[in-house]
Image (cartoon, rainbow, N blue to C red):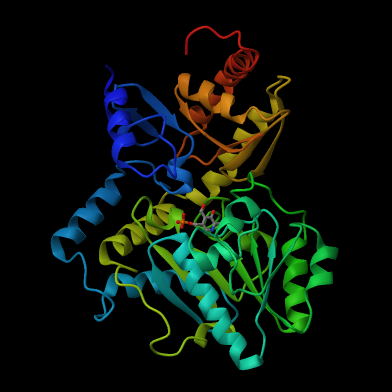
Length: 409
Ligand code: PLP
């Protein structure tokens, strides 16, 4: 019996069925490579869903986290610590707000918590101006806790847990006219992803976020950008909104910020910076010293290794290479930086994900017809090329799998 078979049997006895049994048991990582419990190795093209920004076991993260855990791991938020302070200073200064614009940070541990904090923050702001309505996008994803879920535009995961108390209206993502029709003087906030990640890495048309910004400006609504998946280098910018020339009022982060350690952040900018009063929100673990040490290291390494430029360059050549692959199953490539989706001609993503795994590549069937690629930001052009070269055979295997003619696997 393989090591995986034994582990998956144990999993099925004790774990809740919400995830289904994962198809691989991972035991070790180094750089962009991962090893499973039976010794097979993979190129990691997913980074734990856009999280492990510096790859696995990066020496700088190992050093910073080990040093911090050996010094002081946890204080709660009853006590101040400098790593948290430094991280908040770095994140706000990276925003490059106009002089005189305040920005303040709340730390938590995950993306959904960042959005919960942001929801409470905007509701507090709304109490002052008598507004509650939030405009969010169809197919958007903001997390699994009830506040974030109420704003999530995927009906299949939202509806089983409703009704909710949130006053939300969903509009088609990327449609300026629909947004203009929904936003008015009663709107408290507009909540958008800069690219819809869980919907299948779907970027908006050019100018969409700028149009959202100006609709918010003209109606007095807050622009809340959920950059849980897109920020901290994923698109080749510290924050993806920087490529669009807009500044949000509320910004949520998580995933890649900690490079594998759990940390999230909600940043209030301008009027939203001071919407919380003392006692309004809290988290025992949020902004833990160890996670802050990891996040500071992520920012340092992105800076010192020029990773923003690297992501733009390698991301562009990766996308160009993928787009040249010719196979009836593959109709296109979309996305930004090192955050891409292979768009398929049919609902074959599960088969393509399986064929990738068999060939030694970890990817994600993010939608029935889309494969998400979100590798560590440190991935090399050669590693990307390895996947591009393997893709024709992978697609052929997936096609055979679909046709029921594939032998083995
Ligand atoms: N917001 C966005 C845009 C996301 O992509 C995700 C997760 O995929 C979340 C929020 C929720 O983050 P978490 O799973 O850390 O709670």
